[in-house]
Amino acid sequence: MEEKIDVRTVASAFSRRLAAHSVKDDVVEMLAKRVAAIGAKPIDIDVCQYGVCIDYWIPRKNLGELLNRMEVDYTLGGIKVFPKGILNPDAFLVSVEHHVRR
Amino acid sequence: MNGDKDGRASGFLHSRVVQVHPTLRCNLACSHCYSSSGPDATHELPPETLIAMLARLRAEGYGVVSFSGGEPLVYRGFSEVAHAARELGYRVNLISNGLLLSPGRIDQLAGVVSRVGVSIDGSEPVHDRIRGPGTFARTTRRLAHLRERGIVFGIAHCVTRESIADLPWLLEYCIEQGASLLQLHPLAAVGRAAGDDPRRLRAVDLARLYLIARLFEVEAGDALQIQLDLAPIEQVLASRDRYPVLAEPAGDRRPLAELVNPVVLDEHGRLWPLAHGLAGTQRIVDGPADDGGAAIDYPVRSGAAPLRRLLSAAFDRLAEQAGFVDWYAYLVAHSHALNPLRIAAELEVG
Image (tube, rainbow over all chains, first blue to last red):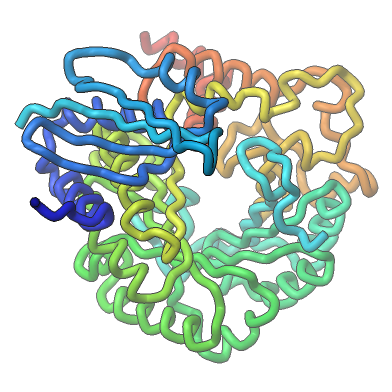
């Protein structure tokens, strides 16, 4: 099984591509809009052949408003919401998949 | 109270901040300087006047003094005023180009200044092109002195279209140097960068910068705080109620710091709300001669005020836009756009 790359390594590689203007402008604008809509600090970032998947911890009280704010279009691969469970019933792991054209 | 965070935000800040520009004199004359500072500026606020004003503002609820300029270390009264501010109970911060932070000077700052912000414009060639040959190496040596003496420092970076490519390098530089903060401030259309400056960020560059800063937060973890002077417009609009001047009834007598935060004290002793460079109609206090006692008689407390009009118009205009905004730069630009003479001139041109 392929080993998952550390989130800091992915963040570093991604920020370098952004700084070097190696990411298309329309992708930059779409991602920035989505990340801004979520507002929270990303806790995990994964990149695959289809795009970018970003995970966040979101408090229960913000979840409904946040999902309402997300604009749905063809670049939104999906949003998955997982309860953290009995350890912290007020926290949810929200995973947002962004389809990015190469 | 030690002058730090109050807990409740006033404006968009938790700390109640006085930004002091005691002089616009500077040992450099950077081509992007928002206050057009340089060696030729001669005027400076007498230390006794500045200390008296800081005492009045302390009584108004402000808890942090941030010295800027010009270069605060060329201001002859800096040490005296910084000590007096500390005695008044302020937390004292200093924004500097770093070149004058000699070991002796740093020893004077220890125990008085809580954090030093040092400007770095990019990697060595970029920084030296803007600030002069050899300045990057000299400033880096000064950071070593700060580190050795245990003074907390951050790096302030003015982001231009050219310097975006240097940001990953800058993050590594900050961590290597032991900085506690990286402040990223988009080049604003004020001072020497006013007008159509091609170095300013386009809308897509602002989006790019926002993403890079969020990724830097992940990358740096707890090692470095990332401060981005840029916010999603939706977030700014949702925070409109942070400005009680927009809603307070006439006759409000709360301390000024609860109504206007930050305030800016310039080299003439004039007090301004929120940002350096606002249009003249926004002035709170005219200068040292306007010494009306301990409480500052700001018109906000007795009814309508220019600031209320400015904020209201700025929020309304912002609601028609999308993307990201440098709020304080936006306010400065908007305050001048609200100037009736300028509007009249623009109508004539149109």
